[in-house]
Length: 481
Image 1 (cartoon, rainbow, N blue to C red):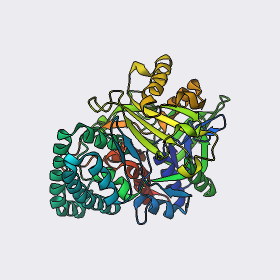
Image 2: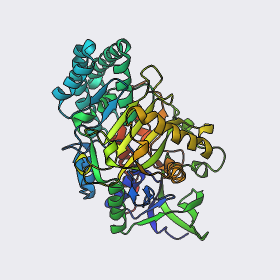
Image 3: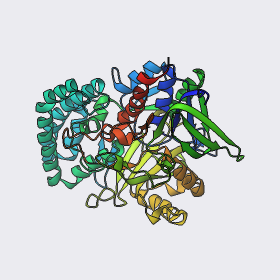
Image 4: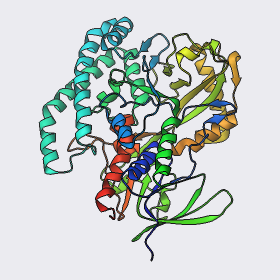
């Protein structure tokens, strides 16, 4: 058999796949990225462009991980620090999550005076834990220790882990005394974390302190990042193929992928190595059709619990509150479970300064629905879309009369397509040895690796970026020179 044309094939639609492909190209590996849906204009409805998903990007501040990755790739997208980073709104409370700690604590003191002292203490300690977690990620990109030296480093971390455990327990005691405060903290985790339950490791502080660390938006949403990564791949003699259907994955000395385009023309491509996103819906092709892929290959299985469903609206600016942040988590009932049709995440895709001059503002509203549920039938999703708008009335009382554009069928199509792109919520047990929720990129197949946010679900947005970097790091020592 002749040598394959490519050193690496990446299969995936999510950000981690694009990071992996761009990082491999940057390191001299001829790479092909196969994106079945492709990003392109998949969030364009009529003349209104929507962000790919509503998770505020973090890690782009000075000396932070995501910015370091972009710098290594030679990518400098236009991005803006958000202040407030986001808002959490309850029927009788609103918290603006400002960048300044004292300003943020004044917000909490105003809304929850009965537990204010405890909140101050929590954030004082959480900031220290967040800095420790961030430093650990910089020095241990896989999170879990992988060598004797790294286990020694972990042992040195033990006092900080113990202090963090006590601080998280203190916060939970506060939350048990004030239902509204509890819902604010839960909503913040849903907005920023890809993990449900067990949000008590030291890395949970990355989400609690996200406003203080900095949350950003890009000129065209996350599409800006995708476009820059595609350009990097193609400028390094790489290949980007989208809007295809992958038919088969043949593993062996070389990895052989067969796919067809929209015209049903079949093609085949080979490479030395293969990286596959954990979000790829056709993972069964990798496991030789024996069963649907699960994380049972690993010691601790990962389960998808909820997937995002988004409706896309073009609205007149006058129906938005004057001080509405770009990202808003709306909790409808402080007594109900956060995932019991009780949380709506809003993103208005223009900055506050542009509201007055815009004739039509893109507004997305996202809820998280149980995986493998009959709610995902189109008829049920149409009913749910109407219910979302009804539930928003207490927050945006003039929303219905100010909707300029709403195509529910197109919104459903985009949401279903983006299940390969936008991150779900995952249930995973923390490691018994370290207490970290981190998985390896390796598979049981030679020269086949994984990437995806679920592998580093504790680490939020940074974890998705890091998983792409880690997958390529597995390949670099093996590449042919």
